[in-house]
Length: 248
Image (cartoon, rainbow, N blue to C red):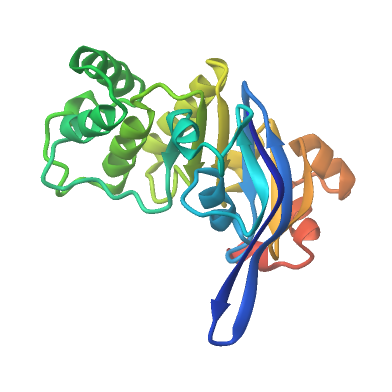
């Protein structure tokens, strides 16, 4: 389980101090998919980066399975599998070597890495690219490789920043099935997406962020009912208070 409590994060710019995250709070539970939504610049990526210890909050706290990220970031990282906004695979390595490298960083044995790689390759439908050098990979192939290496150590908690962004229809369908599988395994899954149909179909709970704050949260049905809309996209637009979300 991942819990965010009163998170604040500000950045200094030439124009002054910008509050990227201003009191964000939510809970993502085991065995559920929690969607993080918001227009561009809402603070989603900054929030995610604080959840997976890439950034430290100015105030507030993040707990992963009860562990405070500020007090024990190493244990938190062991409990997390992260697909960041920058995919960044090592181009001179094959997909298998990319996955193995991350497994070694987590202290896994060669046999454990091999077994886990085989399982992930089957679930992500990437067995045909495992031994290809990743230079020249399509965006979908890079994303699959990045997800596999993020999950090689079998983490209980998974954070995915727009995992289907730029993928073709068939790869997107496979990715949605994979997310459902993670949920069925009892993992805590957080993901961000701009695709409302995807969010409505996958998420057990949705957290909507606008201007650095949580403006609404609940199940898709609860959000539609709260804003009096049958369509989740229309409810989202009402929640953020403008139509900018349609173009984000």
